[in-house]
Length: 149
Image 1 (cartoon, rainbow, N blue to C red):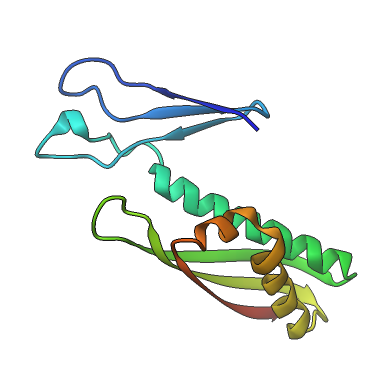
Image 2: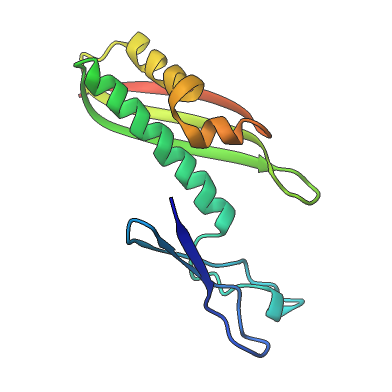
C-alpha cells in the first residue's frame, strides 16, 4: 500500500497547513489544519477534515465494511449500516486517541440482534486492522441499535 502526501501551502502568513494525499489506488484526499488566530502561519484554513478526523473516519469505514460483509455472508437481509464515532485524545503530545466509542445503527429485515453483536465483535477482535491498531492506545467501546426495515 502506498500514499503520497503533499503540502499545498506556500510562503507568508497565510501559507496554511493544507495537504493532499494521493493514494496508491488513484484517489485523492484533502486534509487541513484548524485555524490558529495567534499564529496564522501554523494553522490551517478549515477547508477539509483534520488528519486525525480522517484517521477516525477510516477506522469507522473499516469496521462498518466488516459488519456489513459479515452480516451479508451470514445471509442476513442487511439494508443499511452507519457508525457514529466519538473519540477522546491525550492532553499532551503525542495526542493519541485514548477512548473511542462506536455506535452502530444497522437496518435490515429480520436481522437478529445476536448476529449484529457477533459481527461487531468479529470486526474488532479479528478483521478491522484500523480499530485493532488504534486499540493499542485507546479503549474502544461499541454499542448498536437495530432498526427493522
